[in-house]
Image (cartoon, helix red, strand yellow):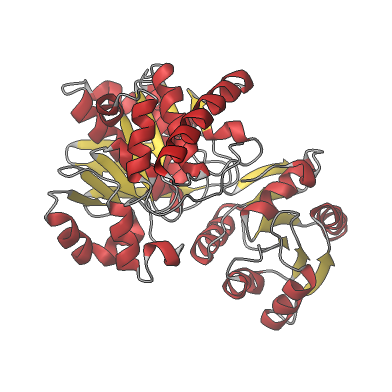
Length: 438
């Protein structure tokens, strides 16, 4: 889209500030009207929850996320609708010209994510969004989202990822992500950050950043899971919202939803003090209930029941598998698995393979690892399983349909984003090779 490398040269903050100035982005309005979502896993769902609550409250709401699943336009949404093609081409041309000018003067290379963040800022400003929810790309300290300077952010979870950029310990990684928040602000931390609480609180102290933790200051209770819906109670200070429903499945969605509610409540208290709590609760209920976010334990077919998950870190994959069993039962599944060549294949196979007796090993068109090598690892981990090799996602789809019919089984597709989304595309008659991922 921008003909730029994924990452730019060095630290981007100075050139990004110059870019936003050239585009006439109102930085004070950006700070006042924005929320930033950082973290290792759960960012997309949390951002979607938050934007949905804001829309239900009656605010014109922008949402910037990554990656896209089927179309590039998905990354830039206003009130749930992706940016139109004409607007996208116009914005790309304007951003591209500004980047070329600054890059020439500074002698620096911009990255594609920097360009996309600037596009989102410009699109949301032109569209007069009252609230914009930005998902961080990598970390927070040097990520473009830091340019928003927002006082309300979160770290949904922390896991080992991008260690060459963020550091090789969870303390370093969570510190980097925490720096998306402006001094004097508040960071909301997901449940799996609680073990790092002493470090986090001390790290944030000198910048006078308040640290709130899910299941400590943010209360969750009454969790209930079914195959179509989840329910939980939420509490924060005097706010008590009972029996909140969400259609997004997975136990980790309680964490994400609670963070989203807290983000919106804290932002609203700063931006619009004195708003009626009854209106807030109604928006929270409606927003959580109506949120849709593809790819995370998503049911894409009923006959046979077919569930896909785009989780691609070992921890995310383990959480999704646990939630799959809770929602749909642990028995009578066929696993379709494919792992990208740059992921932790041993850990992913170790997390998935022991739970299935019929496994199809495949390779996505985009970054797919070798299916035969994957099958060898699966057999080593689970010698009793019936293991099939499908060279392509199309082959995996066909094989899964045949086996599901003959064995009366359900289908679970996991191991990585490209595997899950390409499988869903094939199921809907789209050629996997036609998808354009960034």
